Image (cartoon, rainbow, N blue to C red; front, side, top):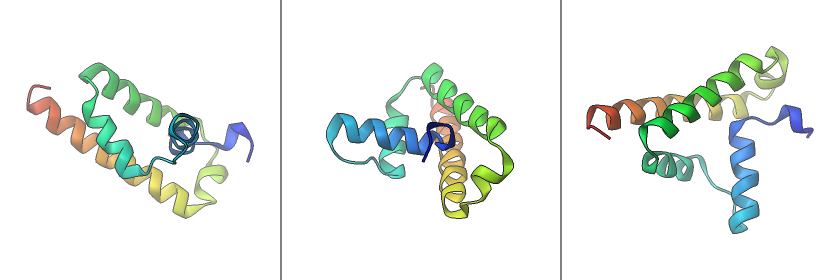
Length: 89
């Protein structure tokens, strides 16, 4: 897998593997996401959106399982971000 084909989930898994020796799951990513402040959460969502825009149509949708994982994670991050924002966090 070349560096250009990695999405946000792949990068987060690689970083967590380098730091702790274990891969972070999408649920673990969501738990960490909730701990961040408003600006950092918004920045992460913008970064994921940028990944969607920059990706070539054939690279991300070729592996539907990976694409589904990314879309599901993005949707859940958005939902939690709005919930935390409404709560004043």
